[in-house]
Length: 288
Ligand SMILES: Nc1nc2c(ncn2[C@@H]2O[C@H](COP(=O)(O)OP(=O)(O)OP(=O)(O)O)[C@@H](O)[C@H]2O)c(=O)[nH]1
Ligand SMILES: [Zn+2]
Image 1 (tube, rainbow, N blue to C red):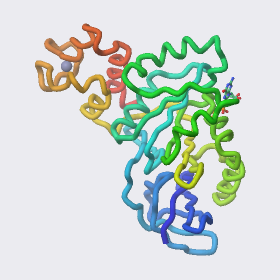
Image 2 (image 1 turned 180 degrees about the vertical axis):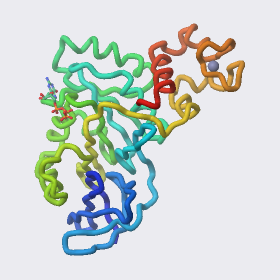
Image 3 (image 1 turned 120 degrees about the vertical axis):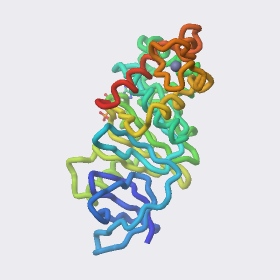
Image 4 (image 1 turned 135 degrees about the horizontal axis):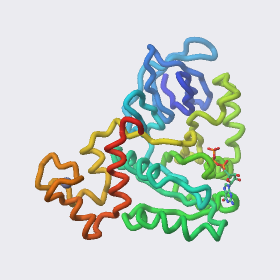
């Protein structure tokens, strides 16, 4: 039997079968590396339970990790929708990290600036996102409360994953775009037998026959321990033209003479704040 994982909660998964019915499943073995969005081979072990036998090859896998643990966010996604808002304040570093994870998996990013109805906060939020706009990252301004529909055309024909810090308005967006989201969540919780944890796991919702949306739990951190220094450098898209040109092959782009990245910062080609984020990420990966 085949199915698609539409909810992941700890070691428990809800798999949607070909006929649309849901089956709670456990992974075979102790280690579980199954993500929401995975297509899996499974076997029914009882009326209301199954076991995942194998994960089918993924087109992409979004995850975050520190030195100890990795946390799968979603599999087989085409697009990552990073939700920020005019308030509360969002973290530039968290967005940068999500963008790096997307770049490294070739997942298309879309930044949504929510709560644009708060007009007095809008200029400052735009200003903070200006560097990302200049780098070519698409930014969609909307207000989830009354204009969530503005996002729908950007989700058409794709599997998208929503990520964002708590309070940015992800739930408001999901509920507006998917009127049946609450019912679907209840059904999933029931299948998982975890009524208390409805908002703590990733959940896949169908928007239409060809468009899916995966809602992920609010992020406080986005560890990139699975990427090495070189992969991180390449994932900063504005660094790419300057890489491999430093005097020293193992340049850490810090105090070395003849560093082409430092030169690019000095000449205004690389934004100093982004450069500082780079240094924080490669210097603090252990605690990321
Ligand atoms: N003014 C305004 N407020 C909004 C908008 N969208 C959401 N909010 C408010 O922002 C707060 C947080 O929204 P949620 O949708 O719960 O945020 P979330 O990102 O899902 O947060 P978590 O559930 O903690 O992950 C709520 O009080 C919403 O009513 C908007 O477009 N404009
Ligand atoms: Zn250098």
